[in-house]
Length: 99
Image 1 (spheres, rainbow, N blue to C red):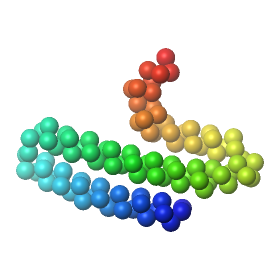
Image 2: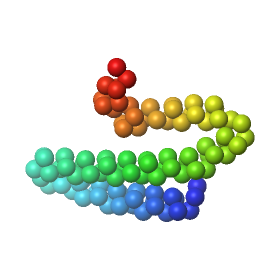
Image 3: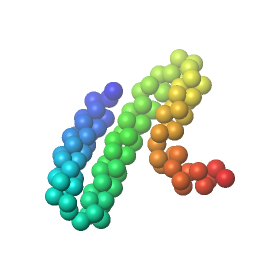
Image 4: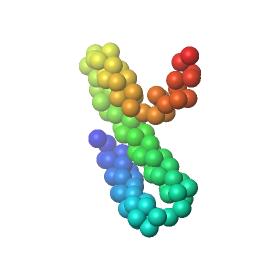
């Protein structure tokens, strides 16, 4: 993993961990549900940003290497399998585009 991406991902994940503790506290305090939901959405967005950092790193490192080694089809298949779990690719909006 490139050091720059590793550092950025770890920093974001540590921020998410702190934010999650805050949201857990909100639930424990029985705060107003829409306020909690907004914070959960913010956490999801933060995790999506981490996922994009990881994807960028993967493309810049593993994918480049696989293509150079003649394993392009294999790495594309692997990446497509991974993308099944990415809401931006597989969520409701993505499914409408396929139709």
